[in-house]
Image 1 (cartoon, helix red, strand yellow):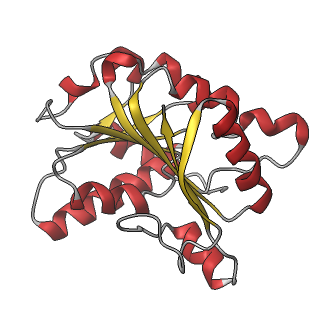
Image 2: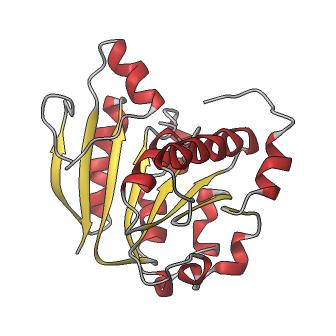
Length: 220
């Protein structure tokens, strides 16, 4: 999703207690970045405006979350959405962190010591052109990197509106040694998650009559 430059975003992010501008420094020790370093650790890759992370984090205070995106404007909006959700709940955002990084190089900021238990990938860029498909967040190339920091039995929750991306992703997961433990071609009528948190993309596509595809893949 393209978004207009927001001149306020960089300043607000740098002043935020739950934004990390140098994620490389925390490779292998992300747990120590949170107030409670004994909680399970989960990621959202490509957090966008933060609709998803702002809801799931405040609803799961017994889990630490790291949300990653590459665009300051997106992260600025995510930061504001997180603040809004926690303010409404009357608590401080102590179990969530935002960071700016290129997910294609995610192995530079995470390793096995970080013990990631789950990854959420919501409506990532489908990169439909053949030569660009390796940029997909679910491509085999990326999945091999995630395996370097996912715990054994760790899961990836994936949602998309794109039929071709979904079918290709199923193959990517199987090629990389993941087990597809649940999938659906119509998430809103065939729920596979305990609780589905709708993102801004999900709402938009659903309103257009597009069925939401989803799966849960488990690292063997």
